[in-house]
Structures are given as structure tokens and as C-alpha cells.
Image (cartoon, rainbow, N blue to C red; front, side):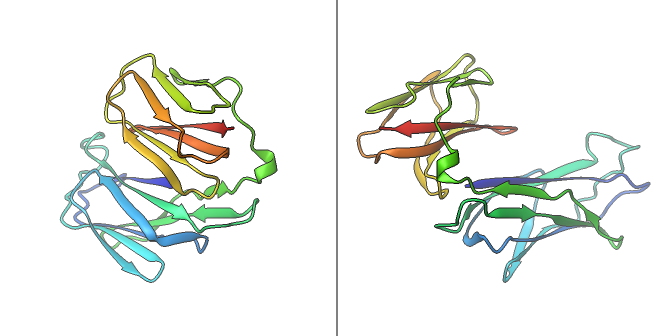
Length: 205
């Protein structure tokens, strides 16, 4: 599962009345799995084959010199790669942002590469951003401990193709995942917050 966040800011000299984001979905992504997660303002979206348009009608976004904070916005969505992509497959994403009738502002290109199974091994440290994951490798259960109680955070366990095996919202500082129904192999464990995603490589034996 990939999560994209497209940010925009009105850096012009006047209010932006309408904003459109045109995003061409990579051919290696499963267009049927796209899920709009959140947006900073009221938003409508349209699909034309593999092209998604995110429309912010009458957004009335002030320019950055008038109000720096209010001049910014974003939209976020998740999408799964197609099944059985070979290791080394590159998935790119570039969006075009239109402020009223001005020329497009082109975003940076994001590149994700499908890992080779032989290149993936379980994390050794198992500690990142105040999150501790243990044991790893795991056999019957996996624990996720947070040094600070997270807010609006989810856990997602996926296989190497991006297929979600387990999802759960975090409601305690120590989470337990039962691995009784999970096959042996390598997995990605993502801790997904509102502003960042922390990923661990997990081995189930």
C-alpha cells in the first residue's frame, strides 16, 4: 500500500478561487484500490481512465503574503500496487496543480521501488521514532510499544506485494498482534499517523 500526499500553496499575489490537481496514476498501480484519505478543504474528485482530478471549487485560498498558514492545502490518498510485480519495478508519481487559469505547477516526482525478496531482511534495531517492535523475527505474536500514546494512528501489516494482512487503529501504548493465522515470510509493518508513516520489516517464522 502506497500513501501519497499532494501539498499546494498559493504563492501568487491574489486569492485563488479554484484549484485543480491532475494526477496520472502509474500503470503499475491498481486503480481500483484508490482510497481518498483526507483533504485540507472541501474537495471533489473525478476519474478519467487512469487520470484523477482533485477539484477544490471556490476554495478562495489567500496568497502566502496575506496569510501564510491559510495559503496552504493538501489532499491524501492510498493505493495498492498491482499484484506480483517483479522486484525492481519503479512506481512514479507526478501531479500538476492549477490555480484558476494559470499554467500548471508541477510537483516533484516521487519514486517507489518494489523490493526484491532477497533484498529484504527483518529490521535489527526494531526502534524508530519512539516505536519499539518485538520480537523480530516473530512466531506467534508481535508487540508494538509506543513511548508516547499516539493519536489518530493506525497499524497496517502488509505482504511484499502490498496486500494488507492486518489493520487496526491504535488505542493503547502497547499493541499485540496475533500471528496465528499469518503464514511464514517477510512483511511490512506500517505505523500510519496523520503526518508521517514509520515502516518496519518483519519476519514471521
